[in-house]
Length: 79
Image 1 (cartoon, rainbow, N blue to C red):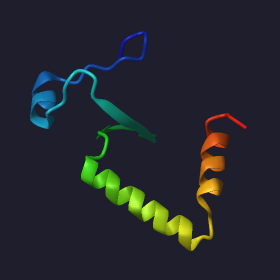
Image 2 (cartoon, rainbow, N blue to C red):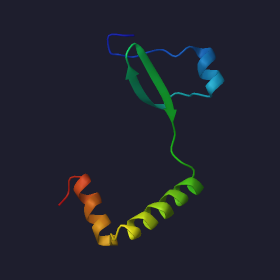
Image 3 (cartoon, one colour):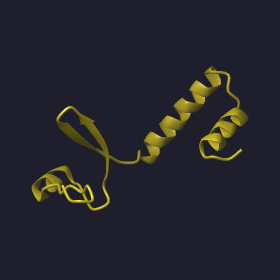
C-alpha cells in the first residue's frame, strides 16, 4: 500500500474481472481481511425497475410525491 493508501490490483486480476481505470469499489474491512467489491451503475432497465419498486413502496407507506421531494432536498442539504 502506498503512503496515500493506494493499492495496486495485479494486471491478471484486472483483466480477468474486466476492471478498467476509473472502476469503482465498495471497500469492506473485517478482522484481518479487506474486501473490494466492484460496483457499477444499474442499466436503464434495472433503474426503471428500481424506480417502479420505490414508487410502489412509497405509495404503500402513504408518502406523497411532495414528501419524497422534501426528503431528497433534506438529504441534499437544502431546505
